[in-house]
Image (tube, rainbow, N blue to C red; front, side, top):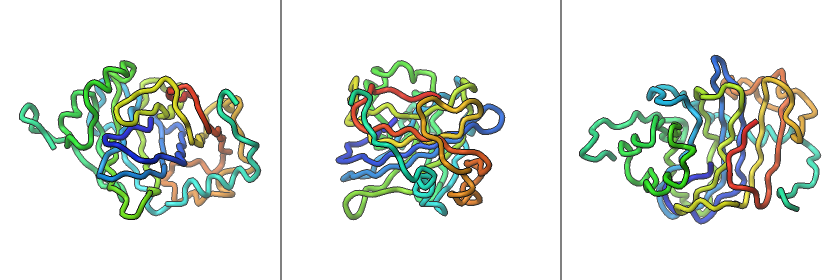
Length: 247
């Protein structure tokens, strides 16, 4: 989901990588370019088990590998033409959520919707927005606090974390768009999705020509990428149904 707590002027060049981790968990890496006039947060709903503990999500710093997705794209040297589908706390709760410094970000895991009350109001959405998205009622949320760009638009280094999955059979990509508190039925995508599946190759995804270790700096990925496996890619450019992607 491309979901921001404050208005944004631009969001583009979104890249997401997913791979299964041990014990039914999943790695997720996310990056994008954005432009905003104020500090804000990016909120990613994630399909964690119901009532997951506050330490269920492990945040991973990739500040030392800012070119994570640049290198990943090297595995796809000749992509085909792309096209769209159709061409602080309140008085009720004095316990703040744990925050973690992850490279250039401050991140928090919000176990349930009601726990957003424990975040600074600048970094959460109005309740009426979530009422439009009942599918996230029992999910958890990874929140990354971003600073407004000093000079125009900003490309942030990849945000990465590992989380327990409610459904261990699928890889999850947060692609639902919420901008300015609205949830349109269709949205314009500028996304490149990457994955390393545990089972069969996903249909209609491109496969890298080489193993990941041949075009990525595997030691810098903190265990997120399997160097001995190929990577698969799906480009989503243009208008698509506004929903998350499952593989």
